[in-house]
Length: 474
Image 1 (cartoon, rainbow, N blue to C red):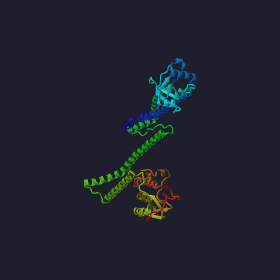
Image 2 (cartoon, one colour):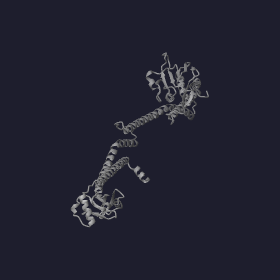
Image 3 (cartoon, one colour):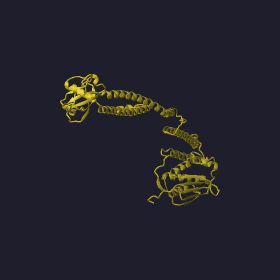
Image 4 (cartoon, rainbow, N blue to C red):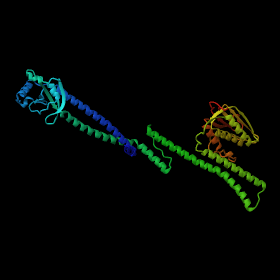
């Protein structure tokens, strides 16, 4: 049985479907044919039994048959024409058949009827020629036969072949018709399987084409609303997403290479100047050497920052939020403010932080707030003021820098995008992209807009939904 199951599973899908259809049809046809055969058999047997019970024997002929049997004489064959076999059965087991009929040995039931112990009986037996006969035996309905008639019964029989012959013919007809039906069902099942699986074949060819050529522009025509159509739409969506992902990956690599090239070029130039000074023995003036070392340190810091941002974006779980916790946004903002004041000691940073608890990944949320404050510090002129306000889940950071032109606002959250006016400033162009992703994973949103008073600078607003309750330890 296990071997058959394995062989069945090894067959192609269309062959399995055709085989299942043919099997189902075969079972249904077999059930219908068997039911038809048994119903017909029951009906024919019932009709045969009813005909035996209702057979009317002429009393005069029965008297003649009785007289012939008692006297040992014979009657002409034409006295008992017809389709019945008639014979008399005595209580002592002897029997006397009508002329021109094959005798049927008396059975115990027939003798019991002749003896008066049973009113009548219906049974199947064989005649002397070995043919199956259906026999109905009842008390002899003859009047005036003397005391001998009281110990006699009359048996009326018909060949059982009247039932078995039509049944045999019917069986062969059902077998032939069933066979044709099963073969037709198998052919129809194979045709249906091929027609139904044609979209699957197209999908398979498309998948093989993509695997062979890496061509993600392949699309499968979608027709209807069935499962195959859904599968085709899902495949088209998948290839479109993969194509977009590949384009973004290529763009990320190109942008990262471009961003890395600038600090590396500057760093290489400075290092070559220092190396040439050592090789030629010409000392660089202390002021210039100090400036070169400061530039080298700055370029190394920029590279470290860029690599850190790239690692953050390339984390396998970057697209999914980490372990969410209920954290105090005001405490995270307060810690970020301490770092921002160290980076811009000449700036004035004011803060109004109302308590607000959110559900987010603590480290990622702190990094997002730090990035927003770093941008405000980086673009603020000396001795400027930065206002930080947290009220009812909205954290706003307002700087007094040059601001962002309206045509550039739609691009500020794209990876590696930097305003033309800010390309000379340090940064990777990934900070706001990381901030947007973190805020979205926490269920919030971030926007950049001009100040409502039309003054200089930009307002960064982070809106986060509140947590059901603060942490228990707080």
